Length: 268
Image (cartoon, rainbow, N blue to C red; front, side, top):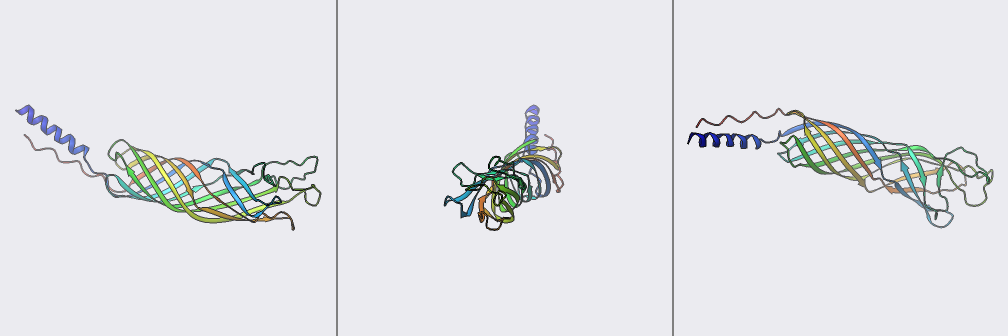
């Protein structure tokens, strides 16, 4: 009988410990990671010489990303966050398909001739700042390893600062039209959403290490262009959707003190 009572008390203690609630309250977090933007496909408002719009992919180099988060643990499984994110990177190429009247942009300031019409990559970068409201679900909040899923809605402020020479000018290349540099120096803000998946490691009662994947997309952003040569090609306004993927490692500190351990079971 005593053995049965002791076994029952031990089992009660185990279930009480495993059923401890998550620490409800505020937390703060910072994340650093790596992002790889999708090709930024943009379409011009004006038509090219072939009667169709310019459709170019603004390809951005992979680069680092950073995030700052302020969140609140609502209960064992649900939490909400306000997140500020940064993504940047240099422009790698600006080009379209072979069906384009002008294939793309190349290095500005390079003097080209009919015999040597080719030049390198354009100069510039693309920067994204996001403000997102996230909702996340923790699958195992009281375990050492806790997988989680989430989604966020907010805004994406994208800045494009690119200067490039038209890679090919329709017609004969002459000294007058050999250098036509297109400048894209504009920014726009649009609706954005993101999907989130990750794993959290319980380092201490109040510290978590988050490994997080984010997929970012949203509505189109618009950028005005200017040709530095008066009377040159004028694509007008480029429009397209910014999409990006990020993997980051972060530290999350829970401000609320951990709950005290449950009292020991009464003696049998």
